[in-house]
View 1 (cartoon, rainbow, N blue to C red):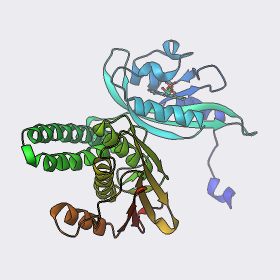
View 2: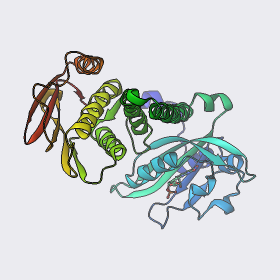
View 3: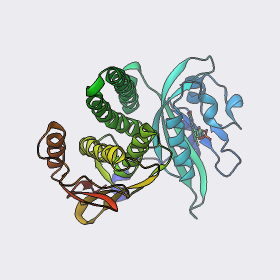
Length: 344
Ligand SMILES: Cc1cc2nc3c(=O)[nH]c(=O)nc-3n(C[C@H](O)[C@H](O)[C@H](O)COP(=O)(O)O)c2cc1C
């Protein structure tokens, strides 16, 4: 069968094929991962045209000489990780030509293995993006997103300081301003987590463990009393970013309540924030303290009053429920949220 299709076709040799590819308009390099610092061992003519570096200037060096001050370290990290893992990767990153001009390089990198499975080379193909391609590249979108997040984060902290300042001169209404500031802060912490460069996931979900740990640290640092310890132990798991903003508001409220009320008249105390990932996405949050306990007859969240209504509303929004036990040994708030954890 194959013979029929091949009628009249003269196969060319490997050497001819290589010579042809080498002369193509596509910029290519080979680097040797078996040598120290993965140096370039071959560049084609298109590489010389695209980068402005003659082959003799490039051979023996690691390709990172194409990077410069505005190259995003996250992009470089992705390349480094792919090389370490011997994997393919495509990254759009900022590179610099020999004359110092910048271009966005859509770099495709792939390992080339010998028959025995040992790695022989890495092949890199460099495509300079046109202005339009650059604007539409996932990287540009990622950078724009990051910029927006950065601004939102800054604006939120500006609002928090304004609300706190206003609160200081608000007399009896101060605690209301503090509550407001704290709620905004829990969103600010969420934005911090979303713009954390260590994240690998998209913007749809956040890691509940890191988010709640950051939130607890922020709440504790606002409290500022050295004798009060907050231990955090939260299982890992991803939750929707939208759910995270609601959960953050709830948890920050519970933590602050405990910090404000549990240790009145005491110098020391311990609180614990636990997050347990149970079966079928069920997530349980337990906030416990060894403080003085609730006053007789008090319930949380209250049925009357704005604060209580807001909390009940937020808990309901996540389809959750709250249970509180309180006594002389302290208070335990248990919050249950069935189906909160998402499968990766
Ligand atoms: C075959 C190959 C081609 C590469 N081409 C480029 C390139 O065109 N531009 C670039 O900035 N980095 C390129 N790199 C990536 C860098 O050489 C280096 O691996 C990267 O900066 C991550 O490592 P580092 O953190 O040690 O610098 C290439 C790597 C390999 C193996």
